Length: 265
Image (cartoon, rainbow, N blue to C red; front, top):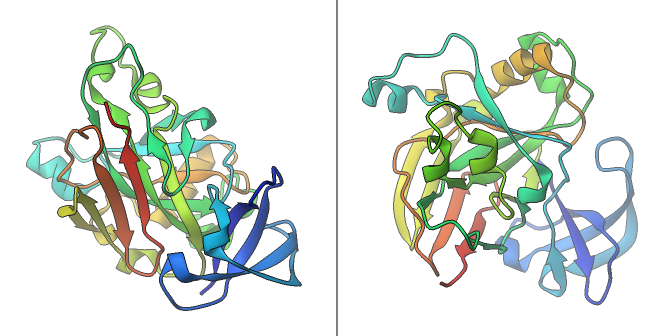
């Protein structure tokens, strides 16, 4: 298992990446600075840094972020919805990406509900087009925590056109990170979301309608997936509107936890 981050040093505009070296809390980590390309050939340098001295960025910059709807079986059954025969998905634009500890911003004109959705994120590591499910793992670089923030009231505002992209793609509505964890078995993972310090979501990845490997395979039949692309696997029960000043933390065993706060009113 390895964990990777992107960062900037103080007073620098240069994006760098590195590998976490210690089995300790994320805030106390030491980073081995690397050169090259995260997804192809990366080489450690002789330099190590204290993570507390760094600005933590999103661990990659996806060309596209794909979000799944109705992909947690227990939620669909509880709501009386049919189980989909193929993945139902939307795209989140890259202007929405928000790193660990970043602040979620409410659009000035929008006074409707904004909700959190804690999810597992699958990071693509190799170009992926039309792959079989058995080959999917070879195209996955690793996994990260996602908070798929949504302006819920906008989706059905126009009864003739569901506005998924608009509701999902506002600035700061695509939080993920802080690191990417490699070489971990996704089906055994449990997603937990803490809202204002209280556990609100607690569901197993094994409850997904389409597993991470199935998603990579099936989505790659529709579109080419490129290194860095991110698939948010869908969310479980327990979603709530976010109040100003409230913290949301997404925890997944084996992954570093993602924490973000809604800006104060």
